[in-house]
Length: 230
Image 1 (cartoon, rainbow, N blue to C red):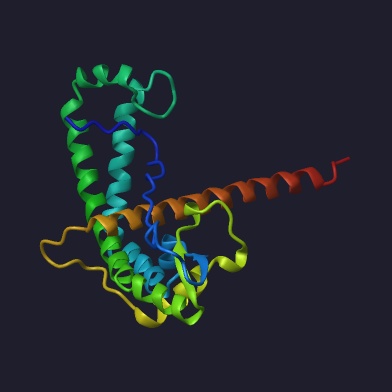
Image 2 (cartoon, rainbow, N blue to C red; image 1 turned 90 degrees about the horizontal axis):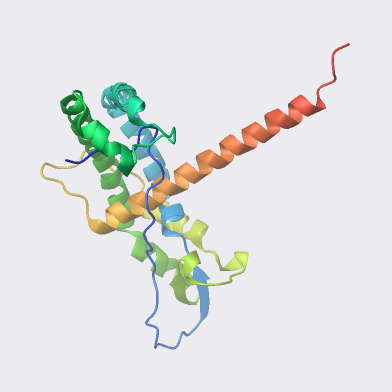
C-alpha cells in the first residue's frame, strides 16, 4: 500500500544536481562561469506562458484535486496524534486498521493520477526548453570566451559577474519562443526533465515562502509603526 503520509500541502521536492562541466582532468582554457539551469529555464517566456496555460487548461482537474485533498485531509486528521501535519510511522498502523482505509486509498490514487496529469504537462513544457539549454550555454560560452560553465553549487565562490544565467535565458527565449503543454499519447517524462522540473518547483516554492515572510514582516512593521489610539 502506498500511504500518503502528508496531510497538509506537499512540501518541497528533492533537488537534483545538474551541471555542465569540463572533465576534472582537463585544463580549462578561459574563465569559469556559472549558470543555474532551473533559473535559466524558469525565466523563459515560453515556460512562464506554458505554466499559465496549464493552470487554465487543467483548471477543472486542479480544482478536483483540491477538493479530494481536503477530503483526504479530513480522513487522516484524526490519526495525526502528535499534530505535526503528517501521518508518522507510529500512526500508520492505526490508519491501516481504519474502516475508512479503502476510501483513503481511493482518494490517494485519484489525487496521484491528477498530479501526474498536471505535472506531465509541465514537465513536457520544461523538456522542450531543456532540449535547447546545451546550445544556449555553448552560445554564451563561445561569445564570452568561457572555458567551463558550472552549476552555482558546484563551486565554493564566484563573483556576481560569473553568473551567466540571465544571458542563457535570453538565448533560450530566442531559440524556444513557445512550447506545447499537451504531451503526445504514451508520453513518459525523461529523467533529466523530471529532475529539472523538481528544481523549478523547489525554486518556485522557495520564492513563495520568501514572499510570505516579507509580507508578514511588512505587516508587523506597519502594525508597530501605527499610532496608538487615544
